[in-house]
Length: 208
Image (cartoon, helix red, strand yellow):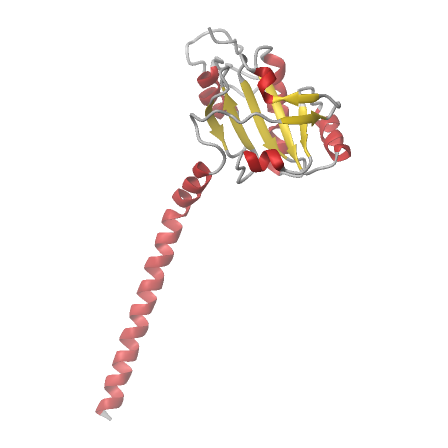
């Protein structure tokens, strides 16, 4: 009888200990999950300070386009797909940026989709900036894309100065664009406001 009680006590203590361990482990996972995700995303795609690899693709309007042909101008390279919800949400904003900055090259790189689907996307959102077709995903692989949308901010010397691996917002643009020589807008035509970094004019302007 005493042995039975001892075993019951040991079993109860063991069960409590296992529950505590599981609870602690679960708490740590939930606590650290955002940091783990952030670390994983930061390790994905090319690193800030690296030269953006050159590539050659055909655009939606059948033009052969190389990244290197834009050397001397800052480039915002957006890597995504038409089925991606965040890519669809940010499409009008990127089009606004393209129209507002004659000196900034905005390129969308669509991965592994047909020209027909991409054309429907371009027509739906009225996109006028170049869309490059990465039909086999080779450039996305070259750029080590882990998640979409991925935005790379490339300066006039071809160096990656910033990246965004999430939906683009006016606030993120105001933070990242100055790193490639573009001053932030105060507001977009869509009515989304940005606070100017220098108290300057209401619209974006090319950096000095």
